[in-house]
Amino acid sequence: GVIAVAKATAIADGTDILGAIEVPIDCTITELRAKTATGTATVTFKNAGSTVGAVNATTSGVSNTSLSNASMSVWDDLTIDVSSASGNGLSITVLIQEA
Image (cartoon, rainbow, N blue to C red; front, side, top):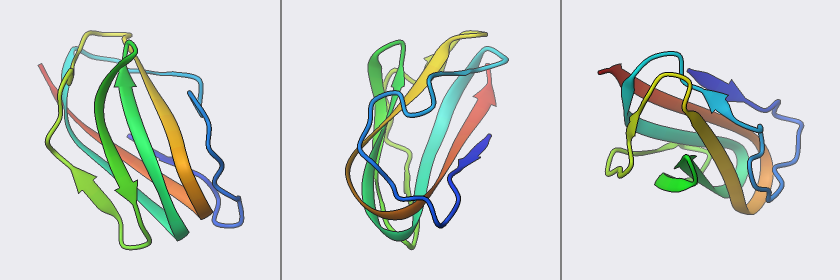
């Protein structure tokens, strides 16, 4: 799935910036990716409160495949925290593989 913030929107630090994303299948998260329109931000992904991985997003886009707590069951919550935000427009990609 892909989640995006419009380019004109300033990126701000926050916890659970989207509330939660429910995964619709039993799956394993295989890759996290984040990209900014301008500036940088650290994006941390959590599964039931445990960190799956973090991405130091830049305008080039950055991926992370070194993940932990990546197995998710149907309707588990994936939350996203943002810190050290400086810039505009945040795009996030989460790749999953069905279990």
